[in-house]
Length: 416
Image: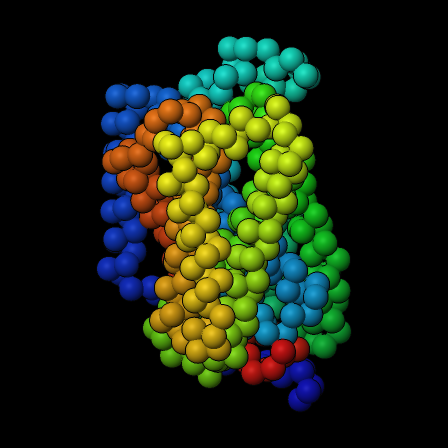
């Protein structure tokens, strides 16, 4: 490798996450599983709705993390070079969530959707359990297959560079993945072009497939409501959530593994600006859906808004708006708020909580317009999914380097 192409980042071998943290996440997952099982015994419909809220929320974060990696490569986003592994690591959970979605379609859908027992009059064949199951599982197989191909190829330069340096228990996997991959300039350039060709497919498939899933698994809960913007609102919310996750994890690994010289205040500032901008965009697309319904008085769409603005659900709707948009908008404007790891992490957590509330508000009122079923079942199920999501991410950190150590194209996060 020529001097101009030497790796820009320090060599960071896979490191074990704190054992106590791993055990805590396992405990969360077990608590969630027990609470969900108990919920099934008491009220199956409520338990499966809580399951749907969390599986859609965390699967969206996972898929959008890979999209961030693809978008950063495609746009040559230099600020994001130190963050590529952190972003793409979010995608680890999608391969678990695939089976969780299959379980929901096989066992939970019949307890949740009105079209199981009624005919969807506009297009009767579109909303049947068999068609929805085949269509959504097929779409997810294609999307997650492309994501797996992208993630594996993204890791190849690092795996090849570290195959003889990682612990013995990882060397077999590393050498298998690195087989046939060289470290010459020609090989790295070929790899760069491959990633640039694959990235558009990752991005476009995410938009199409996650929109389809949003229509089938969320919007169809209300058989009278339809909105062409609904899918975009769902996948942009996941996109915002993924960058908020990236900000939280970046501040964690920065302090825990002493990576301040790589994940610099400039990098944190850029993450803060993206979180701020996408929070505003989230508000914009939601307002763009609300405004035409309000001034045009579409009878088949107004009731969807009325339910979420009635006395029962109004506090939850405004909570989602305040947490996801208002707090970040008014308190993240300053340079200090974005560059300080503690404040950036705090605002990112607030945004994620707001997005979970938003997912709760988009799903549950459609089938429970006059009551808010929120309690131990919902909280513990969400906690269980969070534990499972975190366990997948910790496995990724324990297995792969947290920095793209073989990336020759950008020095640590100091420039835009």
